[in-house]
Length: 220
Image (cartoon, rainbow, N blue to C red):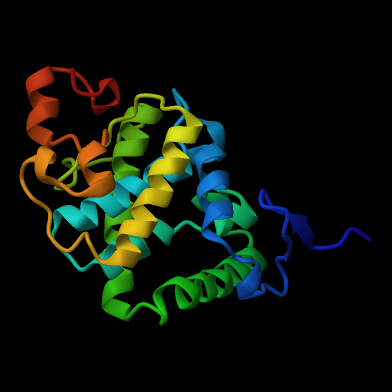
């Protein structure tokens, strides 16, 4: 019988059925998520889970919320480092997967945030995640959901990016959150500290409309 243990990028042995917080490291998460494609690969161009997590973190920062919530947004799909990305419809048929995922996410939040999210914080992040799913379906699958585009501060930029760049940006975002330097979100990109000053995916709806193209084209 095959063991439920996997070997991670950093060489750790991780048992998904008995997750040990000591075996969870941000380097493994950043590396794996930069290489895992959203939507089980059914997209028009490669867009990683790591890019999506950075997008959510950037949105939280743009709303001038505390760095703790920026970090929570960055980590909201960190379980996929160990469990891969399973499309939502399939998850509904996999109760054991959902239970394992929820347990692992709670451990990840406890390790990196020091405590679980409140119900309100969970709803906030779920709403942001759902908002960007709308853009993913529209731009990566041309399967636009009904209704108007969700009102977000940062429209995603779906241009392909080097895996290593996404990994490095993910780690930089994590370290900035740990240092608490993301408290404010200046309106000018040139004034944003650290990783935020180099963000490529914070493209506003105004930029999108001005370009006359889809968000997937990215700003000119």
